[in-house]
Amino acid sequence: MKTDTIKRIFVAGKSGQVALSLKNAEDSFDMDITCFGRPEIDLASKASTLDAITDFKPDAIINAAAYTAVDKAEEEEHEAHNINSRGAEILATKAADMDVPFLHISTDYVFDGALNRPYHESDATGPTGAYGRSKLAGEQAVLAANPNAMIFRTAWVYSPYGNNFLKTMLRLAETRDTLGVVADQVGNPSYAPDIARGLLSVLAKIEDDGWSDNFPGIYHLTGSGEASWHGFATAIFEAASVYGRKKPTVNAITTEEFPTPAQRPANSRLNCDKAMAIFGVRLNDWRKSTADCVRELLTA
Image (cartoon, rainbow, N blue to C red; front, side, top):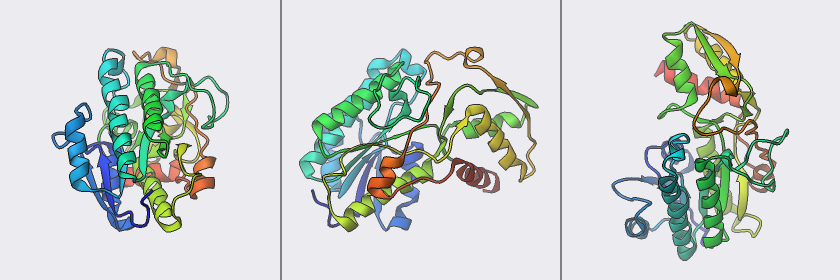
């Protein structure tokens, strides 16, 4: 594995929350991070993807590209698999051929959410929807194509970019005095800039310490601490109130009262001790990062 110099990072995905956060973190890590998406690459097109990677000559590859329309995937499972499984396999295979580190982002949706404790990497998977099935297939394809790959499952991602729960709550609060938010689903809100710094810290450690046979495999990488969606929303409005925004009343509702085409895991909590033990990486507490995100959005 070529790990003596890890400066040129090829990121699959250009407009997603983690991809944008990776690009914004490049100066902090003294790395040249370039994000590729359509039209430069199309993960459904092997040739365009391989050509782009070959031309870039990366020291490492991060796959931050994904089909993430959870509900729409119920009707477009084939398209979800094209990106989340077959596309991921193309990237993993190329990284193996080039003998460079490969980091792949996965999701809590590979689990069914039935456990009453945080999930460990070794717990049995059992996705309940098309999106989760496509992401689990991606994990399996990545590890089969590249035994040295590192997979990082995250959850409940939010940031100042794109569409996410935090931004939706801030938008709804502008016109509503009362909101109903699901309180019987729990997980780990994860700030995309924290995820990006975590991934780049992994690469920095590999460069500094050299390759270890302990590195390949599956990891969990989420914000520290846990919350329900109701608790997350409450914290968002509390943080926004510091900047003069009103705090709507947040009523706790059940999943049954807010049906969606795809079933969400009731328990999305992930245990992240392995990433800390192997790489020394643990993400910030979600409450701190929520306040950071709100501040950036409302003071920009």
